[in-house]
Length: 479
Image (cartoon, rainbow, N blue to C red; front, top):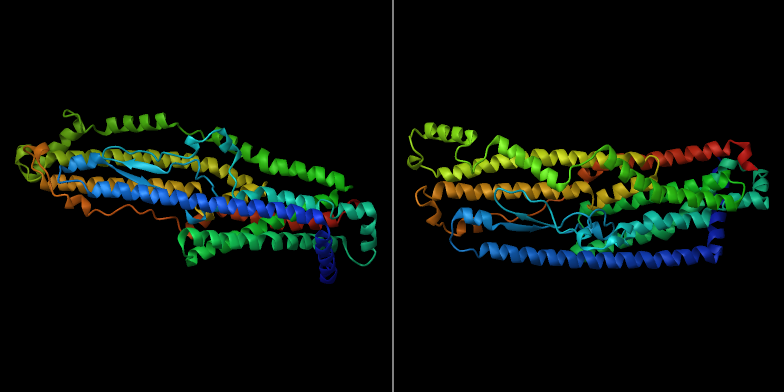
């Protein structure tokens, strides 16, 4: 390759694109759509998080205002936990609209996260929502196609390609130069817009930018730059092997439909077929069956709890429950909580494993569809992916178990077994319990989850330059 020729061709490509009014018009439309998506996304996330904070404060105030009462009544009074959207969810909505936003925590029962936006919307949601990530992932490739489909095919039609090849420029120099010129146009048009939107949106939502957030923004910008480069290489390669601009445009539009409509839908269907997950009713029934097999705390004749009673009496050296120094009823309730919680966690982990296997299909298909790869890693870094949601579900269950366990300990030590239900304890016992605070996944955890997609993007770049080298070596593609 000759760097001098590549630079000249890249500059010529840059100049020819900006001489035309069509690219400018297309960019203006995408700019308006991108700004609209950013504004509406920021406005929606800010309003949503504000509502969630107000609802949380209301629930917390109600919890704190409870009078002196029996701790088991407090356990059944319950507590509502609300999920706020991540600061970068204004950029990439990801799964946020399809997963729940709140969960009711209570003793003896593990509730799933409910109140998803999809549950309250009409069928239009299946067509997607306008976000800046969607604009960059779906519409910018169309922009690249329409400004680049004739970049090499056009040279063949007007005979300029033969002239260039006669001036010591190799076909590879021409292809790399065209790719560099197109990439420079796309990067200059959209990367500054992306970075500024990410910084401004995050500042407006959180009021600050941490070091980890800056790293997320930098990685997102870098990965979208790679994605634009991949699409540009693909456009140049198709244009190079096409005999006319018309053929190149037709093939590229078909590829766009394949990448952005056919393969994503196929991945979803294939994942669900290969790894079938139980529905909510079947999931809950399986848990109930396992709990009943392990031990029923509400059945006085249950063998497991009969053994617990015998062991407890032996441990304290007494011959009756009333003689125990602790409240046996609370001990039974906590043991029932331990059983149901362990069984729920096992079933939940198994369910999550099935869903992860389904999602792995889309990660693998990222090696044949760059859209799948950038979509997955974009959701990971934006905190709107499946792993972020399951982390919330697991943290809420852990919080529910610890809260219930603490109330049972109060019941165990501060309530006497005789006349159990008529006794009360000070409200300070539950007012001093810590509030729930969701801990988002770290950037290392996000990158680990999106490792396959990241590898797929890098593989696409290497394969793209390999394809350009192969095309340049074939005489048939120069005619």
